[in-house]
Image 1 (cartoon, rainbow, N blue to C red):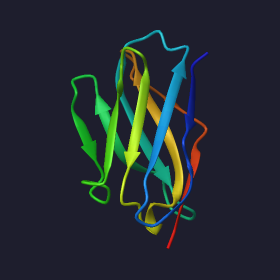
Image 2: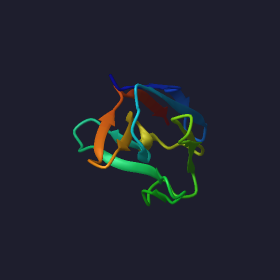
Image 3: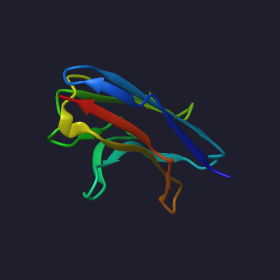
Length: 117
């Protein structure tokens, strides 16, 4: 059974930093991509950052220059370093992995990030 567990969320003041971690278990297929999404109250879930097996990374325009995704596909770990946090970054952050030739997506349960002004 595939499981993804996020950690590192919390309450931080604007301008502060947080580092989110995602550990996985049960993945036996090749990882195609690992990433982070977020969902703020009343809004749709949106992509924050994604890293593919080919070491290509992409970021939402709103976080470019502030957030950095990193990880190890072999160890099946992914991190999100978030700097210069803004109140609009407040959301539940979800870890996501895409695996195998069927390109199946798995999701974590989410971790709350709250940025106070």
